[in-house]
Length: 267
Image (cartoon, rainbow, N blue to C red; front, side):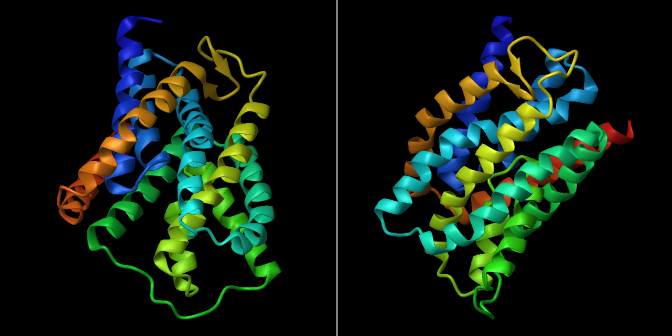
């Protein structure tokens, strides 16, 4: 691997850490588009790029989610009752989602991710929060919700916060507890998702060196190591900068990223 590629993946980790600490975003929203760009530059086979980006993103969340949910737990912001109810569906849905992804083309996955990115950017730009109108469903309902969140998370390489936080707020869970609980839910999503992308593709041909299934180890190591270094910096900046305005700017950036990915599909 060339020095240029090593530097690229280090930069991905540094940027992901700052944005996670500053704006509270992470997972696929930040990492997947950057990995797609890096994999294209590296010359990886086009039909494997999106799968590698999704698998590597989920594998990185295994490590980054631990410090996040432990921090929320120490502040008493994790509703472990909700975690226990939703995790069975999360595990099955996420693992099943990786099997679905293995059968889909990289172009379909890229298009699906673009739709998701537009939705996240719109929500961030408008800053609309769901109205708390109901209570949490029973065990069957929580299993269904968990399965749905798991499938979508596997298809876009995220820790599920973009889906689980609005759901819990809608069900009258206080916002700070919804965020803390979502951080805990992100860990089983990442474990099941990474395991699925590895197991489904251990025998895939044409993968770059140092790949473990659809997890690219050099990128994983760089993201985990360097995002941990810059996440505290992002958190400090969050207290010194106008975060609401920055989120709107970042939303416009996400629109641009999604549009660029759409253009690459058309071209």
